[in-house]
Image (cartoon, rainbow, N blue to C red):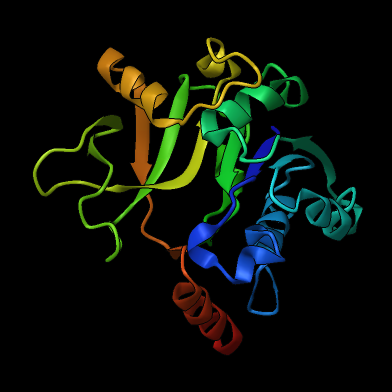
Length: 223
């Protein structure tokens, strides 16, 4: 199974930190955020990684190289200035991702999830990892009934962790180069009753502000 790391965002809420450093390269616990993902992916048995980038993307390529230092093979999917959003970015990278389901991980989250549990995944078109709603997103994104993802209703909601497994066919109707968010595709899958998910209760952080980055950095350095 290949893994796709989303690393094309501008990181506006992280400015001025992201003015000269791509958000996935911001350090936490002594290493760039994205390196935590690469290490966990390698430990879980992944070998083929695709990373998209836009803002300061050349720095990402210079820093990570071909991935050999982690026992990985990294390919890059450059995007135009402003990037293509999540669905657009994944659709444009499909030629690199092949015809089998692949793991998608947001480059700006920290998570201790064992990615190896998804190796060989073949069930369904899309499967989301969700977490308890963080303080900055109390409304959540979706509901969960068993393994079936539903629209968010009432208080029983969860937040999409930015981690999921997707079939290439899920993005078949998105033309390469199109700017498109992921949510419309997820909503369509909910309506069709085909979107599955699970709740993860381990460590997860949406590193969306300098304060949350500083808190994670302190936590990792003292662990």
